[in-house]
Structures are given as C-alpha cells and as structure tokens.
Image (cartoon, rainbow, N blue to C red; front, side, top):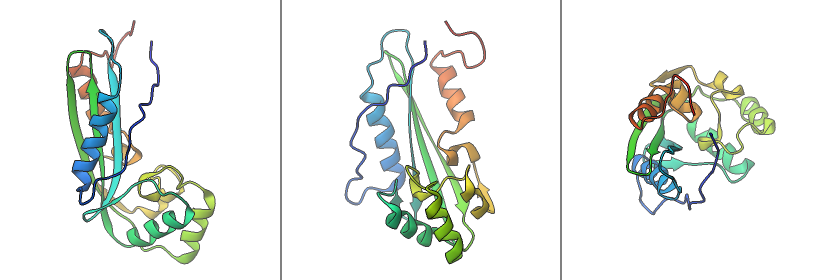
Length: 170
C-alpha cells in the first residue's frame, strides 16, 4: 500500500552552505528520518532555487516572495532537486539541476502574482506549473524537476530499488 509519511526535519541552511550541497543534505535527512520496513521503499526529495550561491527557499511571507521575484526578474537561476530512494537495506541518491531564465517582470506582474497566493510553499517564491509559467521563456534541463520532482530520474531510482514503476503493485 502506498502512503504519504512526511518526515519532520529542520530545513534551515547552514551558514555558508552551497545550494546543491544544501539540497542533497535535506533530501538525505528526510530519507534518514523515515522508518522503512523490509519490502518498503521510501522516496524523499527536496527542491531549492539557487541564485548564484544564494539559496532561495520557501518564502516566509508575501514580502519575502516579492523580494525573491525581484531578484530573479530578468535573470537566470538554477533549480536543484535532490532525490533519495531508500529501502530497509540501502539508499540511492541523485540530484537534477535545471537552469531557468525568468523574463524581466513588471510591477503589475509582480503584484498580481503575489496577490494570487501561488507563491506560497514554493521554493524561490514561484511555481512554473502555475501562472508564473508565463514568466519563464527558457529552461535548460528538466521541466518536471522545476515543478519539484524529476520524473525520469525518480523512475530510474525507484526501479533500482525494485519498485515496480510500470506494472502491478502488491
């Protein structure tokens, strides 16, 4: 039976921690916090937005989301998703980095997007699969990773762990 059991971990970045290392660490912490019984497979992931060496996590409020959008406006950034698939015996890990260009945003676009509330709970303060998709003219890499879960890489790790991605599940 499939179940969602989110682990409780402290997602605060360490001082000076680089975005990719941060993302890998959080995904690994989530996986380590999971109780995985024999025959079970756990999937844990973490996504962050990196502007240079700066980590843009989930904004605490609308003001921080607006600040994130202003920083990203007209610039390229990276979206990093780290995955860990874990069985009772071992773990498999992978990360996916996608480069994203955001168009220069007008004041009207920023205000309207913040008012939509779509930024809430989203790394970098935006979601490409929502209205902010209109802000993204170009990506290099995995669209599904920018949404938060790189599907091809997730399927590969699940298959490596013996989880029947395509087929019957018990």
